[in-house]
Length: 350
Ligand code: ATP
Ligand code: MG
Ligand code: FE
Image (cartoon, rainbow, N blue to C red; front, side, top):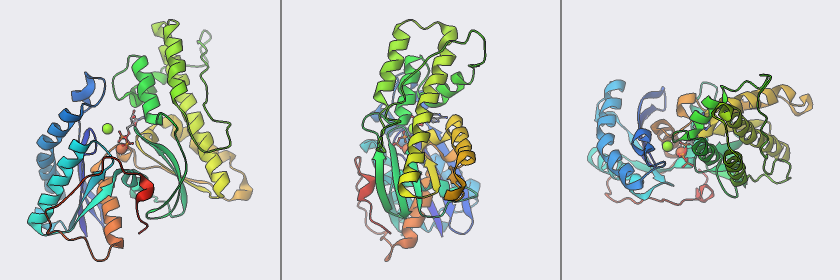
């Protein structure tokens, strides 16, 4: 079955064609980062308008790359929420209209289920059950995943998301939005063994607490305090490094705690922050220190290109949902709605 995926929840227009027999055939992405950059964040109205302009050319590009005509599409999946209402409406309208004209089923996908399942698109996909660490720009959650739609929330951030902590700290360091990759690149310039290396020490919020919740807003305040004290330009890489270490220490610590509490030994990371190489390195290291008596620890990430928003994860999640649905959702109705706020736990089990 050939499933078209359409992602427009925020500032990326993502289109992809996923074949349930042969995997991902083609995908295209347009990021609006440059457009929103001068505002220091996403401007919702500009985002919707840009999706309108990009979506059809990207669709044509994907179909051409896959070498398939439009009418070879068997079903269409689009991001129904959560996200910016206007941006979501763009993708929903195109998906519904296309499904109507082709007379194919159309399915609304939960954006976070897309992220959550994206590691299943890797060459070495994890099996259920697993502990999922979902770390994106708007969310930081630990979940126990027993199957499609069987998600138990174990813990989540009580304030900022991990990606937000990266972005806000980066802004304080005068880096461009979105700051995660930029802060990480700046941090890589710091050599901790340099004799005159400045020493910064930021808090690891909630690292030692027995619960599985996170809190990152205090970290941002601590960075602000450092910056206000006067931060020489040449010291910026070391502060960036300490920010990255603090955030990833907490993410790793809490993930291992979640494995301990659930008794599981499979951890799956997803969302934009799962692209972070320090997070990947620390988790890979944790495998070596994992007690033998608990069986081998498996850690799975999405392919690097599929960590941040993309159409492939929406096509894939849609394909999984469709495979479990009976009867298939009808394609003839020209009705759709979006869900800008939509808790993941409200999804039904498949
Ligand atoms: P949500 O999925 O919660 O609605 P979103 O779609 O905006 O939010 P994603 O696209 O999954 O989030 O991820 C974007 C976030 O990932 C940004 O906060 C960005 O700074 C962060 N990010 C991306 N790459 C890296 C990296 N290499 N290191 C750290 N953070 C990163
Ligand atoms: Mg984005
Ligand atoms: Fe996202």
